[in-house]
Amino acid sequence: MNHRLMVAALVAVLCTGSMAPSGASDLLGQSYISLEALSLGSGFQKVLAEDKPAESIRKSVIRDLDIPEEAWRATKYSYNYAEGENGEREVLVLLRGPWTSGTGGSTLAILTSDGKDRWHVSQILTLIHSPLIVVKGESGKPSGLLVRRYGGGARPAWVLLTRKNGLYEGVNEGQVIENISGFRSTAFFANDFILDDMTGRYHTLEGKDIF
Image (cartoon, rainbow, N blue to C red):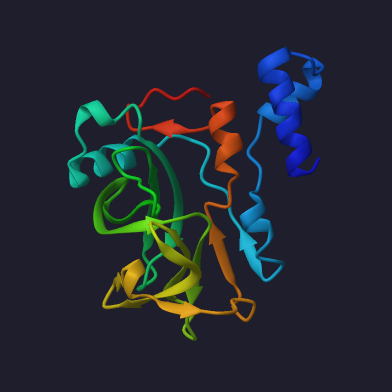
């Protein structure tokens, strides 16, 4: 089912109840890859955000970003595990909501491990749109992020955020890349978040998940 048909079917389910129960279950029971991620082509592996809530990640983000309790319910978080610069595991956390997002994009928190299932935020990037592409260098370790910069008055462009000493450049400091087809990498947060939001497939910092 293509994206437009899925949206039309979803509207039928939510507004008129006209879709048969089995079709509704098929549509509402999973996440889909966004058109933006599909448009990247076959050179990029598309990875959806993790399905399950993660209490340790949720608490770490709230603590280290000092997010007030009144903002928890309206702040949605999505996360993916990724490899760090030295082979360690990192967590990429995309935060969407009035407290963490604006016309230029949303907030990305990068978490590093403090031990078994314990994390702390090592870097915060703003002006982030999904999907987020992790670029690997010759060593096979992450050397940069490719992000789509637009909104807030910026001319739409792909920008490369180089990683140095464990930290990525900011979006406004990134190098504009005219053609990303030469890259071969992984696109995280490939979800169609519009559909996920409409079907309740998201986690909030409040910790009360719908699915």
